[in-house]
Each structure stands twice: as C-alpha cells, then as structure tokens.
Image 1 (tube, rainbow, N blue to C red):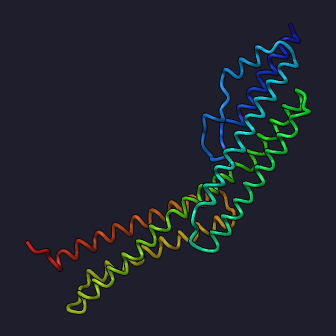
Image 2 (image 1 turned 90 degrees about the horizontal axis):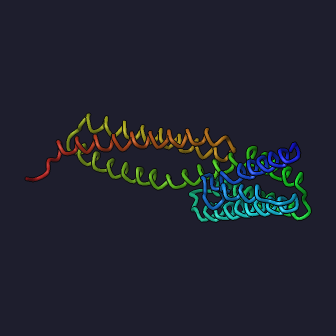
Image 3 (image 1 turned 45 degrees about the vertical axis):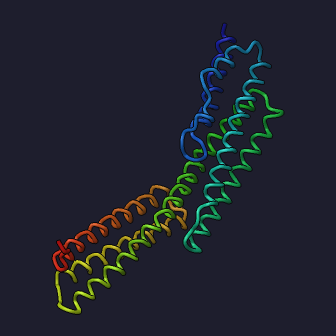
Amino acid sequence: MAMVAAISLGRATAYAETTAISTTTDSGAVTDNCLLSTANFTQLQAAQSLGDELAIRKQLLGETIACAVSDANSLQKTLNAVSMPDNQSISVQNQLSGKLDDAINFYDLESTKLSGAGISATQSIAKEIIAWRTANYSSLTGQINNLILWSQNQNLFQTAQARLAQTTQIVNFIEAAAANNDLQAGLNATRSSLENAEGENTAAEAALAQSQSPNQSLVLIQQSLQSLADTYQKFSDINILLRTVLPTSQ
C-alpha cells in the first residue's frame, strides 16, 4: 500500500509540475491549447505499470514543450512584424527577438533530454523549465508586450504633433488681427502638456532599451498616455475658445 501511495503521489506531483509549465504561454496569456486537462491526469492514474506511466509523462511533457515552442515562434513573428519608429527601438526589437531564439533553443534542448529520460529525469526536466520560465520568461514577455504597446502609441503622438501645428497656425492667424490672451495661454498649456507626454514617452523607450522591469516601463507608458489624454483635453478647451472668437454661421 505504501508503494502504491508513493506512486500516486509521484503521479500527482508530475502532473502538477507539467501543468505549471503549460498554464502560461509564451505570449504571456493563458492558452487552452497548452493546458493539460484532468483527462491527462486520468491517463497517468490509469497507467498499469511504471513503464506506461513514464511513456505518458514523456508524451505530455513533450507536447507541452512543443506547444511552448509554437507560442514562442508566434510571439516572435508578431514582434518582428511591428514597425519601429527609430534605431533605438529597432535595436530593442532585435534584442528581444534574439532572446526568443534563446528561449526556443532552451525548449529544444529540454525536449531532447526526454528520449532517454526516466521518471526522475522527467521530473527534473519539468522543474528546470518551471525555474527557467520564472526567472526569465515572465520578464521577457512583459518587455515584448510593452515594446509592442509603445510602438503602437507613436502614431498617437505624431497625430498630436500635427494637431498642435495646425492649432498654432489658427491661433497665430487670429492673434495677427487681435491679441487674445486666453487663446495664447491655452496654446502654451497645450504645448507644455504635449512636451511632458513626449518626455515620458521617451523615458519609456529608454526603460525598454535598458531592459528595466516590465512594471517600470509600463508605468512610464501609462503616464505618457495619461499626459497625452490631458493634452487632447486642452485641445478641446482651445476649440471652445475658438468657437467664441470665430462663431459658426447660423
């Protein structure tokens, strides 16, 4: 009975370890395709011998690793397809893509260990992968997701710059005829707000380039977007002032 209990505990431990690998995919989100189910655990429990159990465990672990490789390849494809606005962000993109190559190589090496592995070795492989993902992959996927988010935001900043240029022309045209302190004050406040947002946006790119923690770069990205939202509110305030100076025809 003690031996049977020990085997059952070993099966439960192996299942828990392998599931821990598969619950979070390389794109940073849970993917059903990489999750083991209770049916997989039932397979282990139904094994009639240690040989059967080993075969099942190797199969499940192999499938989980293959799925992780597939997700890493998918994330790399997404990352490489993103258009970056400058040399610094292109350099960060290349570095992160290289780290995904390293991750795929790591998974491949772990997969090759399965062929001659026994039960104890499969447990070791699972633990190695879990430890590696905890130490490396959470941060990597966070950095990649933040870089993609940052790159997508650059169009918003370009649009704001174009709108500021247009608004400046309108205000200057009106002030050429008659000075308007409210309009000039509103324009100055808008320009200052956009400069602040752009400064935070630049700081976010620097954080990504310096491989700071995903939380640090994400906070800067969020701050830049909040400042940009404040800038657009100031654009709205100027438009209200413009309507009082240049009322629309009825």
